[in-house]
Length: 306
Image 1 (cartoon, rainbow, N blue to C red):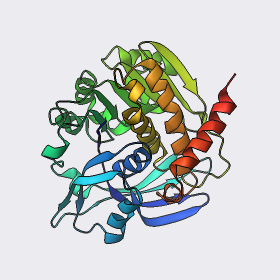
Image 2: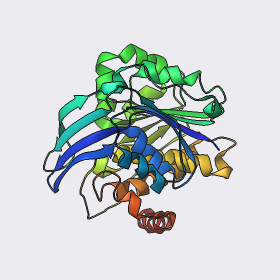
Image 3: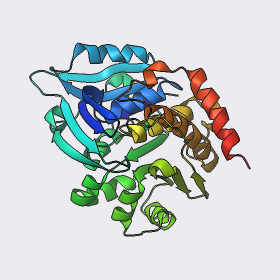
């Protein structure tokens, strides 16, 4: 089934306790689409400036399932840039700079050839912008949004409006507490369900994730990788694995937002994210094949099976 993602594509500077990477490919859209492409074709709707390097465009060739027909290059514009420095435990970080560039301008439009997309992931961006994409994809069967503390703080009313129109929400546990005022993760999740979505996925970093669904609750650990290099993009690749699997799972197409479907998909998201953290940018994802994911999936399934 057709999967579309909207969000950012940018250039990152990242410092971690293990090293640093300057001027590398990043952005929520890129991480998501790279992960999703292991499972399903994925359509990107995003905007970059005409300073976006050719070698970064060539990087998409290593993920042949990614369709760039919706990637707009804005003449005279500057590509989104972001830098951060992670703390010693890598669970928190300081943002060093954010240069919105073209991301601060009018968003890209969904091309007519993408308007029939059934699965829609609204990666991190202002909730009013996210809402603007909904009417451009009238045939959607499953819509999931991501958000962050910035929008909770400055655009909460827009976010509340968006939640009435989407099937699922993805956010981390700090954001869930900030949004709801509930310290207990499950309680926060149930509160979010009262605002409209059918399910919420709450990310807990090295402690995995919790699914709070109208039909049940599920908690999964993270994959215990020993090679922790850069957590940047792990949340986006997690979402890409989840949505990519759902779009490819024929057994889920009659009800892609069901508790059983989402629970199954979370495992695939967890596995893809466990590779992302093993290198800077998309370097580790460029090295693996679907067979590697399947092998780690089996290892993970055996690990959590009781």
